[in-house]
Length: 198
Length: 198
Image 1: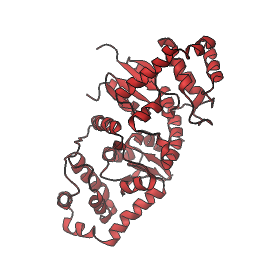
Image 2: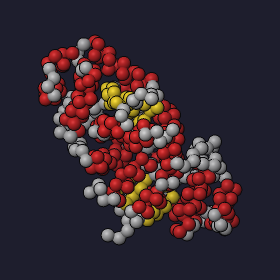
Image 3: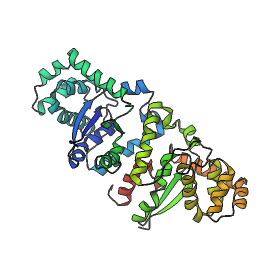
Image 4: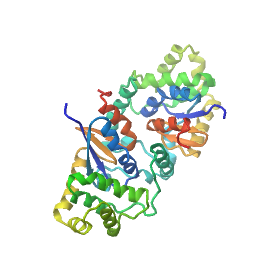
């Protein structure tokens, strides 16, 4: 069998996606697998499926707030709940669609770190420009490109495809057509790639 | 520190509770902890909190159906989705409240195995009577006791307490006041008991 590919549908607005994003490359590497980072609009998937953000149940939101901190400690990664939440993630996702495939992973990781660990408002173009510059990218050209029909369409196509394939939340991973939903399914994804769920 | 106690709020109608029930005693034993099995009515917690069963979002229900099978394979336990679902779990929970504390764990495990692995309709008193008999319990006395006000009140008290402490789903675990929701939080519970979440 050739090396497995993990498709990773991510939206930078999702805290559990940030957590999973800090782990997925190491997980893939353990199995000689690759990760294809696929930006999509989680809100559209909620709309299309009738799903809703977990914090829409108040007592659940309160629990999950603490749960996120436990996961961050478990992984040994920083997490600071942002002052602007929810955030307009559209721009950050369009930047991902404007980049060459090889740059998407580090963009995604940088933009989610900025939002979920450094409390930067990634809904602001200036914040995105600074992150791009820090990564050595041409931020002016990149942000201009996010306004082109091709880039807008690419994000829409990813989102439509995700919904068509059964995505209703984030993060969502696929290995072939086997879907895994949630940071808390990395354990199963790991077992699956290790051939232990045959 | 004295040995930790894990309070385990369970409702036999919940498939993820069944999965967690197959794992929790070994997990506790690894840490020298004990498990207090506490029956409660999940439906009442849904009502009180505005939470709802995950399968109320159709595409989520479809995913979770397959997800349950992956977890069962991951744990190496049988799971056969029951033909009667949802089931009336009230009787099975009242039996748990009628038993001496020392018998609750094996009752819970037996009744969930009957429903989730053997497709028995545990909403039927005859099924409960047979499970009790197989465990060497006096099934007639036990089922009679489930009709007493004290037993009915004990289940209601557990349910009220769970809701008061923030329970909105099942399975839910507590170590002191630290709450863990979901079979998929056993990983965090394990880390917590191991002192790795500081």
